[in-house]
Length: 210
Image 1 (cartoon, one colour):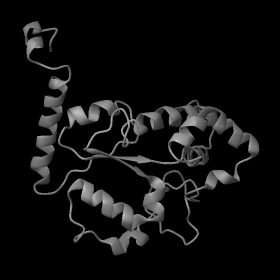
Image 2: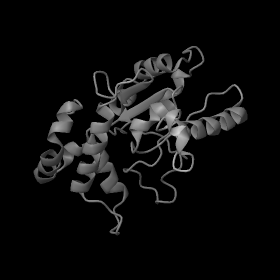
Image 3: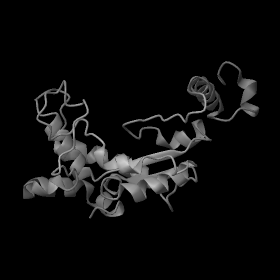
Image 4: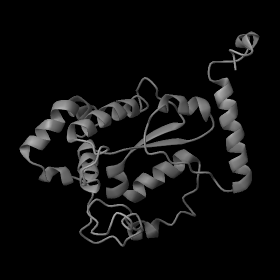
């Protein structure tokens, strides 16, 4: 835009045009949603630094999970050999870079922002009521209408421990009493643990997973 209309550089900020496009898109979505809140989900943190700029009025929740459990889940979910299959080292590197970006938005981080909240996956699993109460307050939503009693009955989707086929594993499945997605990496060999730690030791410590 600036390249085509250079005189506007005096009044248009670096990301203003992108923010206006995003704003127009959000208004269209809100018009369809009516009084409901819009929830957008993204599986990665690429360009996370732009989120508060592009969506200045949004409440942004970043979910952080122990990279070793992410690696365990990824390796088990995508077992078949393919060009796209990642190694443990590749997953560790990706998690380190992504987590460093996330931690920069946490309290005291270089990119800390009042509209951004970092929540741990483990807290959502182990103490869901407390975690959701905090997130609802952060999002400006009342706890009165939230169905806390249904938290334990939420189905599981895409579990790496599912015995379903790749086609059906993403369908909702009842959660068994033995279901525990935390700490599965503890069953790794010493070589696997050392391999991940060699790459991600500092970040595991910074994120509180050491």
